[in-house]
Image (tube, rainbow, N blue to C red; front, side, top):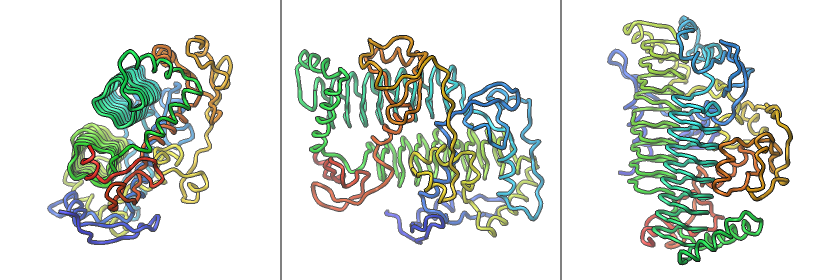
Length: 564
C-alpha cells in the first residue's frame, strides 16, 4: 500500500517543507528504545532529509590526508586530521593497543549540563585514530580501507589489490581512476561499472570485457564507443563490424590525439540524442525510488543501494535492512536510525561504530561495544555513559533521565550538531553531494579550510601540456617529477605501479590532479536530485535524475520496459 502523509513539517534549517508518513511513524516507533519496560519514543525529525544527510556527511573525511606526528610516539604519520585539531591523534597500532585508556576521559554527570555538552567535551579531548584502515597492507595512503593490498589514494576501499585513485571500490584488481566500481579488473576511468574486465572510459556498464567508451552497456565484449547495448560483440558506435575490421579501426581510434578525442566525443554525443533511457538507473528491484539501486526491495528516497531492503533516506548501502537515514554501511544489520558508517543493530544517532556494535546511542567511533550512551572512541565496552563505566542497573536508571532532559531541550534523537565535526565543509564528503562555495558555507555557519598542501620535494615540476602524448615517450624519471594540473595548477605525482599500468595498457599520463579527475567522474553520475519532466514516449509526468536539458530520450519505467 502507498504511504499516507500524516504531517507536513518545515525544516528548521533550510525552511523547506517535508512530509511525515504513516510508515515513518511505524519505523520510529519500532526503533524507539525501551528502558525498564518504558518506551522512549523517537519524535519526528525537525530537519528535512537533505539537511539530515548534510549533518551526517559533515563527519566523514575521505579524501583529504595530512602529514602530522603521532601524539603518542612523535613519529610522522599520515592522518585524516590536520595538526591543528584539539584532540590527540594516534597511529593505528597505538590506538588499538593497551597503552592508553579511553575510559580515563570519562565524565561525571551533573544536573545542570546538557547531554551534548558532555559529548562535545569528549570530542575535544579523547585521542583519535589517524586512519580507519583495517587488515590492509601497503596501503598507508588510503582511508576507510579494509582487507586491501598495495592500494594508493583509494577511499572506501574494500578487498582490492593494486588499485589507485578510487572512491567506493569493492573487490577489484589492478584498476586506476574509478568511482563506484565493483568486481572489476584491469580497468581505467570507469564509473558505476560492475564485474567487468579490461574496460576503459566507461560508465553504468556491467559484465563487459575488452571495451572502450561504453555507456550503459551489459554483457558486451570488444566494443568501442557504444551506448545502451546488450549482449553484443565487435560494435563501434553501435554498429556491427567483423572482427578483423573492428580491431583495425579501434587501433587507430585508441591513439590519444586531439582529433580522436573530439571525434569520439561527438559520436557519443550524437548517439545519446537518440538513446532511450529509463527515468531511473536501477535493475532487479521491487518497489524502490531514486537512483543506482540494485537487487533491492522497499527502498525509498535513497541512492547507491545494493542487496538491501526496507530502507529510506539512505545512501551507499550494501546488504542492509530495516533502517532510516543511514550512510556508508555494509553487512546485513538492521534497525539503525541516523547513523554514518555504523555496523550493528539498534544503533541510533551514531557515527563510525563498527565491528558488531549494538544498542548504542549518540556514540562516536565505539567498536565492539553495546549498551552505551554518549561515548567516544571506546572498544569492547558495555553499559558506559560519557566514557564512564556503570552497572547494568545504573545504566538503565541513568539513561532515561538523560533522555528526558533531551526531550525538554528538543534535542532527543537529533544527530550530532555539524559544529561537532572535526572537518570543515570543504574537507568532508558533504561537499561532494551538497557543494557550496566558501561564502555560501560561511553564510550557513559551516567552517571552511584554507589549508594548502606543501609543494612536493621533487627534481622538477613540469606543466601537463609539456608531457608527451605517447606513453612510449615518457621516461622513468617522471617518477621523480611533479606534474602541474592543467585545470587547478596543483602539482601531483606519478607512482611506479601507476606508470606500469599506463604502459601496459598504452594509456597517456593524466594531465589533471587526482582531485580534479575525481570531480570529473562525479559529474558523469546523475545527481542526487529529482526533476519533474514528462515521459518522452507517453507524456505522463515522471520524476527522474535526468534533468530536462539532457539529450537522452527519457521514458517512464513502463514505456522503457516495452521498448526493451
